[in-house]
Length: 121
Image 1 (cartoon, rainbow, N blue to C red):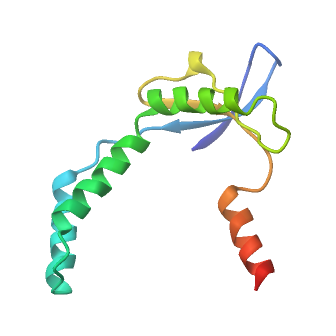
Image 2 (image 1 turned 180 degrees about the horizontal axis):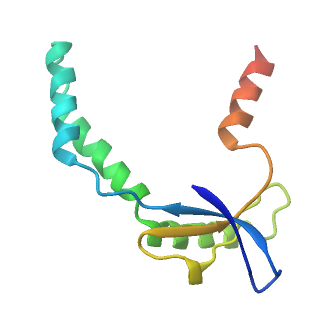
């Protein structure tokens, strides 16, 4: 996502993260790659089902209207928590193709997880 500055009701300018949806996933190309993998490894795995799952997950991730609703619901669930932070959703700056969230400084969850694994070793 791209970072930008924009006015908000709370502040004159706030750092936000905007995610713009890319063109649609080419499901046929994903199926062809999965079929080639199946042939290359002489696997009994149903790579058509694997391809369908991959495409389904990508489509889910690109449903920005749903992502905005889910992010707002998540923020509501953890509003009283001190250990969990959720970004603000800016619905006036969101659409089916754009998701705009407030920026939260800090360590990304995957980085935090890797650091914890390294400390445990």
